[in-house]
Image (cartoon, rainbow, N blue to C red; front, side):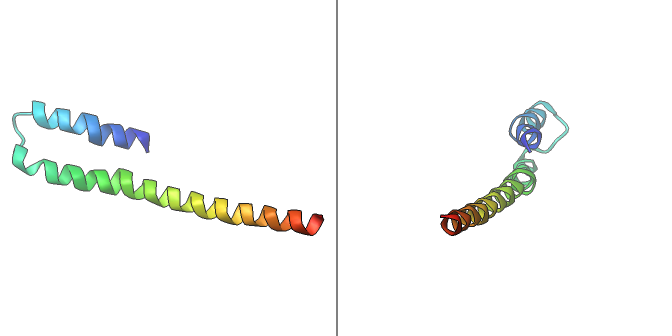
Length: 69
């Protein structure tokens, strides 16, 4: 996911500024849509999944400790 973040935050704006064949007023809306679709949405999904796994794993360990004592 880090390469996509670098691409959308660094490489794509530099290409948009240096390329004289692009319409610059049409470039920034797709940039933010692409940033959301390729970086922020998958990152949020991974974070939510990690929180769920941590919640269930910690709950399972707490239950085992109570039963074992």
